[in-house]
Length: 101
Image (cartoon, one colour):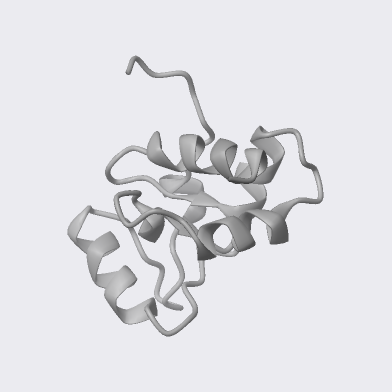
């Protein structure tokens, strides 16, 4: 497997319940300043066991053919959406703080 993809998956696995991270946040956390698209490619192939629904666009918009299902899952976790339908990224973003495993 691609070593970068493995790094992405380790990061995504740590996103806590009730929080989200953007593709660009993940890229930055992994030292790939312009790597948001690479994170997106990795997520296309991510294992089903990962909380992939917690990875969203930087502007808080949820897109794609699974958008409705992902939004429902995020709402169930308490993710806050603005009146424009986008996630309140200021309130709900997780930046990869160190947490105990």
